[in-house]
Amino acid sequence: MSSACSLLHLAEEDDRVFSMGDYEAALARWCPGCGDHSVLTAVQRLLTEEQLKPEDTVFVSGIGCSSRFPHYMKTYGFHGIHGRALPVSTGIKLHRPDLEVFAVMGDGDCVSIGAGHWIHAIRYNIDMMAMLLDNNIYGLTKMQTSPTTPQGTKSNTQPQGSWLPSMNPLEATLGVTNASFVAQTAEWIPSHLFATLKEAYKHKGFSFVRVLQRCPAYLPKLFEDAITDPETIELLVHPDGVEANDLEGIYKARVYHDPTDIDAARRYAEDQSKVRIGVFFRDESRPRYEETRHLPTLTADEKLAVLEEEFDRYAV
Ligand code: SF4
Picture 1 (cartoon, rainbow, N blue to C red):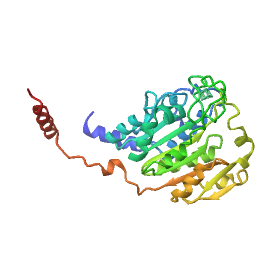
Picture 2 (tube, rainbow, N blue to C red):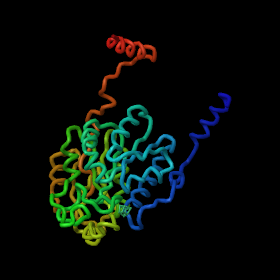
Picture 3 (cartoon, helix red, strand yellow):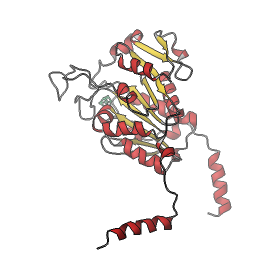
């Protein structure tokens, strides 16, 4: 292609307008009624609204039902290994900061085997978005207790009921030094889900969204109260969070929460008497690793010379 042709080609590309269909890949194979379907639709809607170029967008996952996500997005994707969505995402974003990076994890994936990566990704605060699709169970391996499984829940690994109190991912995230965006939403409230993902996407830094997600196959009653009785849900509302004005007629329990107040955010996260959704915390002034690390600017030849010098040190 001549340079004139390639310039013309680029100009044409910049005129593209993407519809939701442009982000849809294979037909999702999750169970009927699985909450993953709602998240997929909300994410495809977000990409459409933001007009993200598919070739500049990457979805990274680990292992689990929700980790099939990259297969269903017509973008770049990496369906990796258990608990490793975040280190892979980190590597991609550090080497290609121009890409939009999304990590999709389940509770068994992020909060258990991937917990070390989760904690450090929060602290590194690299500009990407992480979604924890939390259905409180290992679904892919057919109903094993996960760290977020409610205490007493009978599963295939703990048939007499899980022994320990469940872990609270919001509390844990808010407790990590340098956390910069923490939110919770529910996949069965599509407008709130979309608005929360949008705020997370806009945030400059590591945005962590816990999505409460139904698994009708293995824990069909898990969120039954929250779904059938709107009074069990409390919305955190704020102009810098999710206002949810469209939900006023349904969800009346609301609290005005300034997301810069981390102490209040921690109190709301810790108190489990209500299911709280909204932006708990955001602070764009927190340092981001990609900006604060000091990388020497070397040419390829200079890098080679440094390497040779290092090798020479070990010559025998
Ligand atoms: Fe969804 Fe549960 Fe089915 Fe997995 S097992 S696809 S989480 S409903």
